[in-house]
Image (cartoon, rainbow, N blue to C red; front, side, top):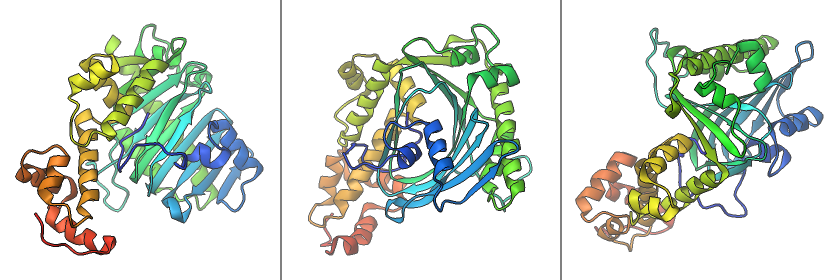
Length: 367
């Protein structure tokens, strides 16, 4: 599962960097192992611990050559874990997530949001959907984050705590119940619209600096507030089979293959129907599953890669812009120029001028 990709190539190379699990305990590591590693050997990472309530916070900074930003990790009694991602990655990040019996709630943040009482001095974030999932034992999924800005909050919670403290999943046949009890060999996945209350709590989490013990307790309060609001939203969803989805490992691999094909299809050779046939599925399932897993439509994902490929080609002054347009699937240069400007905010000719110093050459004016 990859949320809202924001950069270039999704091709996984042997030297591709991982995310927080890999950074702390290596490929295939679990959240619990990552937190254990920090407790045993925090090094010089900023850390706060409250032994009375069994709460721990650690900040893991990205190495300078990998980007800017950090992951902030908080745990409560080994039953609730929160990961705050505030990173700008310079290269693709990839991680395989093993099952460890936790229900996951993911909130991807982007752009400004208008609240009832706007407070512009605080972070302005939008979380358009809640993505919740739960793997059956033995099921794994992949996370892929492309280069660029990535802001996200994830909660990982033991099902027993959700049932005992929130009554979550008690309604038979509901999406929440299916989320709590994924089918053997499958991953249950539920998506729901967020609320102003949830976005406000997410914004408040991002505003915390963990500069005092009080910040640690405030974080715990916000984590429980997020869980209360989120479980209420998911329980309130209509009892509708389309509200809860389960993907088998084969299907998860199929969607990953779709992502790989699209990443290498800058010219738009594959239509959605072609891609569905290639993968042995139908267009409806491909479109809905892809958006649910990767946070964007197939069209937007492909367009991102087309524009990125075009930007790469513009750095070579010997390639005419008309050739670039054709390479990335546009029959007319004017249409390409319009799409490129909409994506990057400047036309191809201006982008070429900016890229020329980086490539060590100059533009020869080719269009």
